[in-house]
Amino acid sequence: MSHPRRIVVTGLGAVSALGASAEANWSAARDGVCGIAPHLFDPGAHGPEPVTLPAALAQPGFAAALEARMGRKLTATLDRFALFALASAFEALDQAGLIEHPALDQRTAVVLGHGQGGQETLEKSYERFFGQKTQRMHPTSVPKIMVSGAVSAVAMQFVIHGPVFATSSACASSAHAVVQGAGLIQTGLADIAVVGGSEAIATAGSMAGWQAIHALSDTTCRPFSAGRDGMVMGEGGAVLVLEEREHALARGARILGEYLGAGMSSDAFHITQPSLDGTQAALRGACVNGGLADLDQVLISAHGTGTPLNDQNEAATIHAVFGDRAGRHPVIATKSAHGHLIGGSAALQAVIALKALEAGLAPPIQGYLGVDPECDLDLVLGAARPITARHVLLNAFAFGGLNVSMAFAGPSAD
Image (cartoon, rainbow, N blue to C red; front, side, top):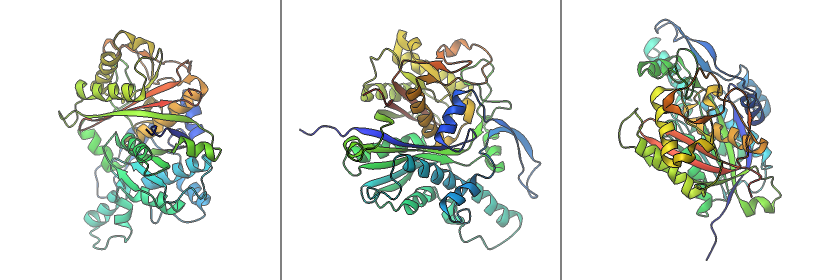
């Protein structure tokens, strides 16, 4: 009888308002740096008046820096969301020692998650067509808009011929991508999987849509806090290199953590309101499949959007799954620092959580104003806290009731 293939993490990459590398994102989150700031969103000459809203946007010059690294022009053929994915993949593969490695070929997969794809290109194209009455679209419009544009860019850049596809499930997109990539390794269809996600939908039109459903905060993201009033849009991307353990050891790769398993569910209830039954099923599934149900302490990386309903439901979910042991597990919510990357959030949370396990420190939740009795959890507040946990549970609960919880071990858990 064959043993299940173990899956380890050998590379991490990230870009967000907190910085242009995995290490920069981790150190900023650890030190309580907040990437959220007021930004002007201008719809242009044919749109309504500009509005100023809090958002967490990547630093200016990001695209130019990536083009310099790659040695070629990219912005003409790739939307911003794909640039975030490509930069994160380059960093992760470089750390894994896989740039131009012969292992990258038929036995490597790429699975990335995105909520909306090339939103910036879409809005510019519509402005030309509807606003400026320009009949002819730019010839790269369709490739830049399509959700699979990022995975195709990564596959072509690094000459990867294995399974390559995108997942799109709103805020759970990159979590589903991680699980799907891990599944390809577990079933023997790949030895390496480049997984994660990215998003670049902090645009004038997109922000107006999020305002219309009263999801956005006017101030900042305050997960689990009294007085929280909504989410804050972020942008960026994150990538993990997953690898079959024996394959990684054989080539001398450094192991940064281990993927243990996941739970997934659908609420089948409401397009925007969460359901305790669905989120509870996902978290309980991750505990069981990851073997974490009976551990004394597990770090919990919460979905933690800062919206009243989501945070209350997530707190109730943690209590329902762990019972009187819920208070033993420290809870972090890093969207308070990097904003909500929608399709890229879960992957960025995974990067930060794995770095937290390695350092033995949990990064603080920012923007906290005071206790909400409905969110009675062991929240990490004020400053980074030393932890003994060597495992993390990570939640991604999306609009439409699409839920994923993932379990990882840190580098010292084996």
